[in-house]
Image 1 (cartoon, rainbow, N blue to C red):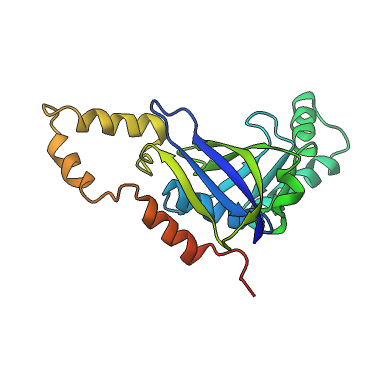
Image 2 (image 1 turned 90 degrees about the horizontal axis):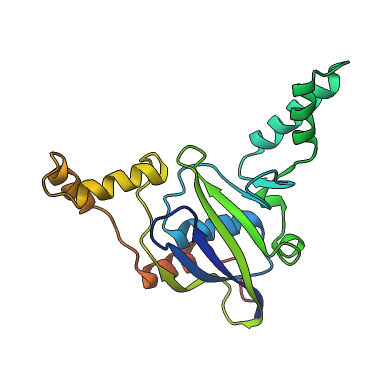
Length: 214
């Protein structure tokens, strides 16, 4: 048996509800949580992502790449090296100074989750798919060494379409048989794999086992 966290994750700004409820063993890191969310939400895992404690003025951010961490350090060093900062530079410096950035793989879940029951997860900085991640329950006797989806609602939007506005445009075309691109989009949509909970749970077991049973 394992200690585990039950999360509710909701896609923000969607005109219709898109959410998942899932459980993940607690003794893991934010990189594995990211891996789980990509499968749970049925994203392609082809873009950068981040966890933050707030959408506006976050105090911490967990990212995938070391380059983002180094870039943050470089910007701080730049401002510190200047003998005098203009007013706008001081504001930017304070923003960077008050923000802690770490790689996901270096941050364990328990150290953060139980002190911050709601976090925000953003996938694809261009399309800006923002999610609210809420801790619903701490489970002491979870029997599995991998995450599982227990409930869900709503299909995941199309990726690389310009975010929620682009996805809505595609939905409008699909719903308008008179639109000149209707048939083209209908044909393309036939290749979309829609959400199947059993398949999602199989993939979670296959790729996101976070603690092996000894």
